[in-house]
Amino acid sequence: MKIRNAAINDLAAIAAVEAECFPKAEAADEQSFEKRLSVYPDHFWLLEDEDRIVAFVNGMTTDLPDLTDEMYENAQMHKPDGKWQMIFGVDTVPSERRKGYAGMLIKQAIADAKAQGREGLVLTCKEKLLAYYAKFGFVQEGISESVHGGAVWYQMRLSFKES
Image (cartoon, rainbow, N blue to C red; front, top):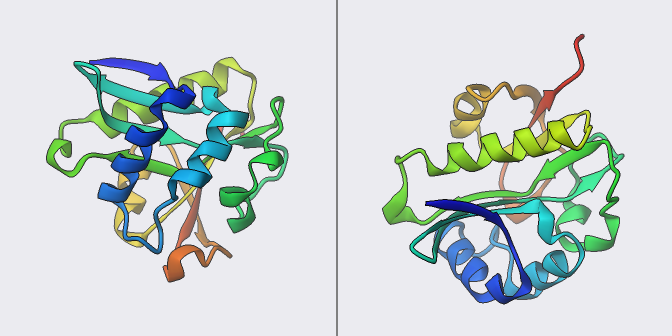
């Protein structure tokens, strides 16, 4: 198993994993990933098993404190020195779930955000995943304004600053 950042030649594999992991209304398409990879490939963490992507985490950095639906489609909102690492998706191939792979990538994203001097990370998730992300230190902030894919999303934040 190897964790690495993405490159544009990973586009088809990333899009295929996303299609396996999310309903069509919620899944990013290949064109969206192409835009993201062209602007912030270092904010894609891939987990490979013998050169096959089994899981990935992706998102942009920004000074905006909350994750908005516009961020999913507008890669130009990425700010390289942004305060917050947004997490758009945590994907694990269904046959590879419950092996700790997503957790490995989340921990890597957290470590990288800390090393880069960010204030923390922000993600949205469905209610059934609140406890999962809380294990990594994320705190639930209530229902998000996001209406992505017609689902109800909860915003969670992991802040590196002491309150």
